[in-house]
Length: 420
Image (cartoon, rainbow, N blue to C red; front, side, top):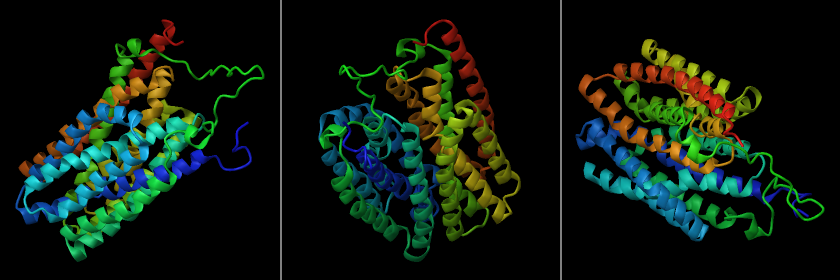
């Protein structure tokens, strides 16, 4: 009998720990990076494109280290691994404050990415999969919302700190603060699996009277061997690639605003609204996926994304409309953590979900490698982000067609009897 029948299942405490750990890793470390670009590039005397190369290096390291990190998660003690990871990620972030040449960002991007693979990419999905056999999507949405909430708090704080203390001290303050918070969270809350607590996962398949587990009717879908050859798979990978390339523009929003004459304090506020959009998007898109399906929800998100880009293109002189546009763009960016997993599940089922999702997710890392510096170089060469914004609008349109094609291809696979 489940020991947690009459009390809160420990899976929800795992989720609390993940919300703090992943939320601070993403919200306070990764998502504040854009605020530092204008002042750092100015003080170092380098172009935005050259500086953002460190983010591309980070993405390359992430791409290479993902399969290694997955094996390490299965083999080593989870607490030691995550403590080491947050020391690498937050420690490298703090060390940026001591750098005075662009090569420092290039070198430190390596430990930053290695630690981030565990903290912001692998740990959340793996532990939620271990602890939640029911409400996985809700748990992922809550975790994504936590990243948005902590990002919404961190962005204006970072912006004001940069304005008052300078970028160097701000790097150190934020990096050390994350270490002080996250390490105790890992020690006190994180457990690798329910077995470590003598529990069954939340919503585990019940056991029948004869001791046999009841059939899990959800363990159906399309096999990896079939899926990877299908048009649906390539369309999903394209969606992952483009949605990540689009969301990568958030790093450049502060530079876009500086180019329009707005202050760094205003940029911090706008990025805070962006993260609130991520928070609301993670929750609302998750709920809508359950209500109207992942296909319709994804199409809605893409249309909203086009609206936000048009606002940035044609109403950049309005501080109010720019702020609204950033919030909508953040709402759409939540697609990465919420709609991407649910699309993969809807298209291919649960049978080989982890393999299919991992393969399609390579598009996420590749997009970051290409898009981040590309946006910076376009800005350096043209002095404006207008061309970039039109390209992003086109990406949204392409994604709409990719979603429609993916579901058409899925229907063909089902009709051919590959769903079993």
